[in-house]
Image 1 (cartoon, rainbow, N blue to C red):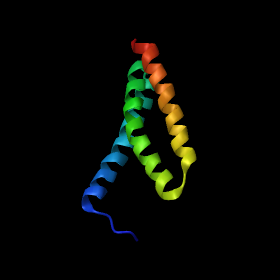
Image 2: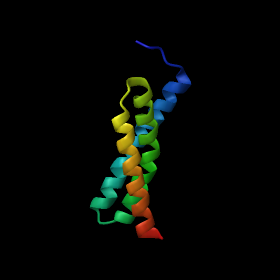
Image 3: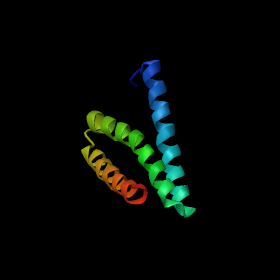
Length: 85
């Protein structure tokens, strides 16, 4: 088992909570017929997804997850532009 610095462990915990929390909030808002707010919540969650999938790419060579996250981020940005601008 790899020992992790307490600061790194805290950052990872915040990232995982943010990932799940904002993703679920985005889906919830979309299902409550508030897609413009769901898009924003999901776009915020992409920060956490990008961090997690980038880390998975570098540590476990899982580049496909990172590429998928980049594509989803671009789609969400387009959706936010479409609804809000």
